[in-house]
Amino acid sequence: MEPTATDWAYLAGIIDGEGSVMLHQRVRNRRKRPDNQYPFRTGNAYQCFVTISNTDERMIDWIQDTFGGCSRCYRRREGNRKPQHQIAWQANDEVRWILGGTRPYLLT
Image: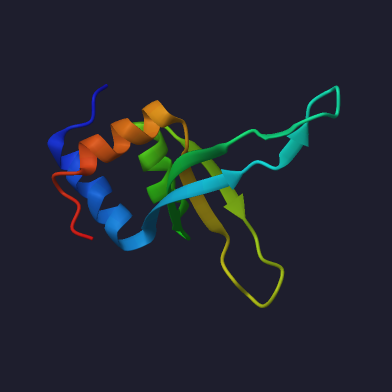
């Protein structure tokens, strides 16, 4: 089932308030060739992530049911903190789909 315009707008509001869009750079180290003659750089790799964190599991479940993504739950052992639920998209095609659908509605 394709998300409606209202679903996209709601997701954009959640990303604005509880989410983040990150571009992560992975610097690969220099390596030597098998013959140990010339070091060469393997280059940089970039990956974009969209994540949303919240303590309300129902919201994360709705987002996953509607838009997919990978969800997790983090539990802190200090104090009486609530478990934190997170959903993330990191595959390039998923990130493009999420950002493309929410772009007209994103404010920040």
